Amino acid sequence: MSTGVEPTITLTEDGEWWIAEDTETGVVSQGKSRTDALDNLDEALDGYRGAGDAPDDAALREAGIDPDKNVSGAPDDDDVFLDGHC
Image (cartoon, rainbow, N blue to C red; front, side, top):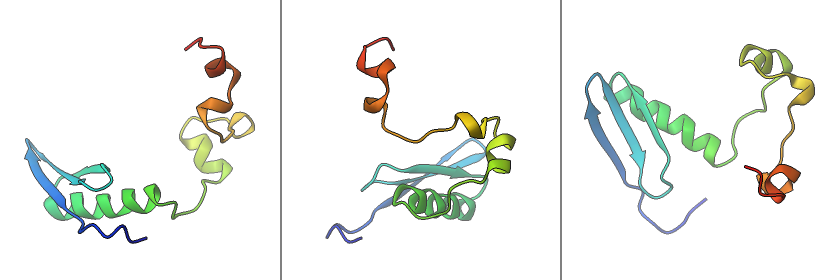
């Protein structure tokens, strides 16, 4: 996907962590080294752009999510948000 904007990555050292941010998208990631931070940012940008596979039921359970109750959708589609109870 080309936006016609040159990508700009900022790297900041914060204690033991390096923070990498893609200024075009606002996606941020971190790592213990500059290389790790940039590799993690690449992975985060892939997810931001819709790349990757959906997690399987085992991965959801490992993350503490009940696969039977896991649903996708925008918050606007949920009655809780429509009623303003959040």
